[in-house]
Amino acid sequence: MKRTVVVLSLALAAVGCRERQSLTSPHRLSADFSDGSLTTGNPHFFFLPPLVGQPSFSGTFNANLAPVVEICQVNLDSNGIPTGCATAPFSPGPVQLDGASQQYQVNWHTDAPAIDPSQFYRIQVFSSIQAFSLGTAPLGLADIDPVMNGSQLKNVKTGEFIGLVDGRTLPIKFRIEQGATCFGLTACFEQLVGPNPTATLDVTTPPTNLVAVSFPAGYLQQTVTLTIAQVTADCFDGSAPTLAAFGCYSISTSPLAVPPFTCANTAATCARVEVCPTLLVADPIYHDLRLYKADPPAPAQLLTEATATLITNCEPWVAPPPPSGLGSAGHRIVDLASGWHAVMNAVRQLVMPAPVYGASAMAHLGLGGLTCCFSNFGWGLTSPGLVMTASVSPTTLNIGGLEGTATVVITGTDFSLTNATVLGSIRQGLASRPAGQSVPFSCGGSLCTPSPSFNFVANNNTEGGTGTLVCGSAEAEFVLMQNATVRRTYTLPITLSQLSGCL
Image (tube, rainbow, N blue to C red; front, side):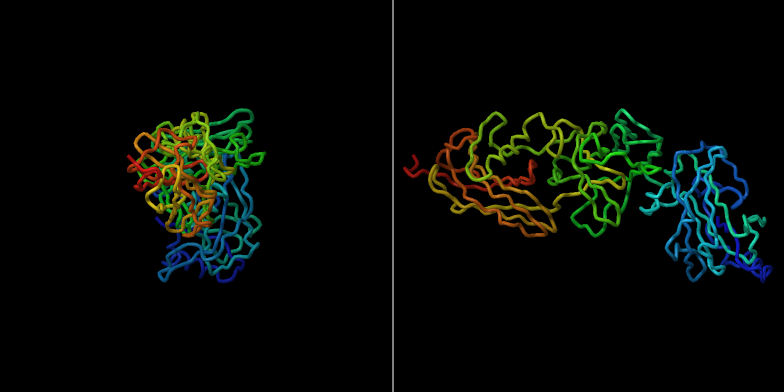
């Protein structure tokens, strides 16, 4: 159903002519109106007099919101059908809560700026400034038509005249009930939360939502309306091809939650968002998943990883396996080249039960992320399509003698790596020995600097390995590490010999 609210003009001339045109012209009657009085409108949002007649409602009023009203000129197509805002929206001012009357109100002073009587105007109400800035659908809207009477309004649907305050001010009043922020959204969850001055506040959603939020003590200074909804399209900025969405949720609070302390990437100072991974562990890019925060159209930001303990309906997170045969936490490792000890310490962390943060965590059910504030949160790939290959020359190595040169090639489409290292080892049956490592390098786009190549040696005296290498067939294994995370592995066949000859 279409409904137009006729409002003011700044002149008194030609009143009858303009009002008749407003009531009879198809161009004028094609304006939009949406609230809970219509079957297609938000059932928990209602415009109130004097903009419309008194509606009927039965829901619970939500006084814990900071709604925003935006007004713009309406763009019309060739048939006079509204197609959205033709100008940048402006705010008539801050919305005030009238708790006694269970309503919100803002006064639109139509002479600041002055309206154009020849144009349509659209009033839109959003649940928060965040909902408006992210392009979320409004709770309700009303297209209005200025007429030539500077002291009266006219509702086109009812034909009733409504007086203006001071002849130029339109009081925009509306009612928002609990449940309004989820209207039209997929898998949406709304709840009043806070304040939490002394204790952590955990919020879980229905099992089908696969998402949860944890607020550290002191984060929420007042009661807010928390809304969590699945984002089915455009989670990330479309110009970021390195990101691919694997489960995305919009999280917002109204009023906007602003903690009294700075988020310093710790569980005590940042909120934690948890989202279930949506790839199976057998997927080759499973361990490339990371949680990102996105404020489209701004580029997405990688979150600091954190333990996830609230999304218990997830498949258990499986950490990347440690490089084969490179020892365990109890082995002592010596340097083969600069930085080897540091890399092996990182590998050791993957098999120790103590760490529970980051992509290498083994003790939590999913992966979470720390954030200062709320927006869209979704899974992305740190390096989609990342491929690693390697070669050793020569392919026959003398145990304890002849060194080879390992050359690693990393390719992909617009991938990024920082603080990366390739770790080499030799596997032969139950035996496994460290064989060398590259210097730390970084990659951007399709170029890695410096190129990951290093000396490759077969040596039974290297600490940190297991078993004894003997003459015969073996495998050279290469592990791409980024900090403490295994990103890719690659193996190729080699042959082992001895200077004294093989039996």
